[in-house]
Length: 112
Image (cartoon, rainbow, N blue to C red):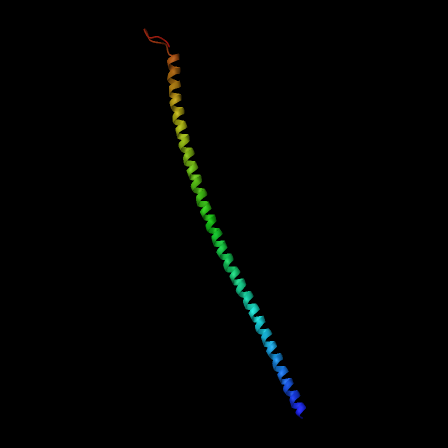
């Protein structure tokens, strides 16, 4: 009987060890799953931050681009106004010169 009780004790001990191993494996699996979940959450959070940063940079780039377009448009409009003024002045000068050349001169005035 002593060997039977010793055998039972060893069997119980072995069974307890197997249960502890199973429990440890289960805990390890839970930790792995928790780590995966945390990693997925972290990745999602980082992706959201990255998306927000990209959106912000796009918005800033659009604002910068729009400001540059407005500046260029204003510059072109100013240049166009200046050209029109010069052309108008030249046209007035040409018109006066043509009138002077076409109209008869008055008595005593010399034709140039």
